[in-house]
Image (cartoon, rainbow, N blue to C red; front, side):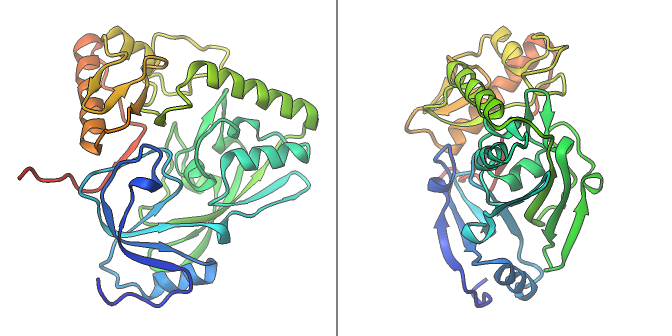
Length: 309
């Protein structure tokens, strides 16, 4: 992969990814591409040899990059893709816009995207994973997205084209989502901001927000988010089955299941990706032995493991 297309953005060979993820672990990518704008991204993908894989990466809030790194081009969108524009009830957000910023700016305009306020990460990841909480999901308000395919084709996909499920969409592997359009319910700005402040206070009281984590480690077996539903029960929550298996506070190397919220995995300061993934797999085994439930990872794990010497 030495003959790479010319770019106007930044293209870096052998770029370590650990400082780009919330968990602060992971080896290098063969290349990291940070496009200047849409045209730069399009031209790069069109010119990139077709056998070279790409991995679109957001702000790394829900990601473990394994210690051996990635044999591909990681594409990370930045300032050229973080605009937020509001017209009527429509919110147009670049894929690199932070969920929290979109929620706040929408609230300023009297539009209710408050569920995004406490979701870590950017809009691209929120769409890809149908992020949600408090009983609301990205799929509920999404109208359409703009996507650039691995081969450089630009297309518009409707929300129905993405076939959303719980923490899931059918957005193609290697496709780079560049912007999303939402149709948001109206609300009083002061009321919306007060609601978000209350949500933040509740989050900070129940989740280890001051530690290095990647949000929820496992999907809820019940198939819906942890908060806000009228039929909310605890027996099929990931944290509950982890507690029942005796794994709250469990450790492996520098990785720990949080004492504060047992479905949050934290890097206590010296964890490797292998520590984090290994602890997660141990939790899955213990939960299965305890309850017969197979937990599914919510954190994405990518890349190569380091081979033992």
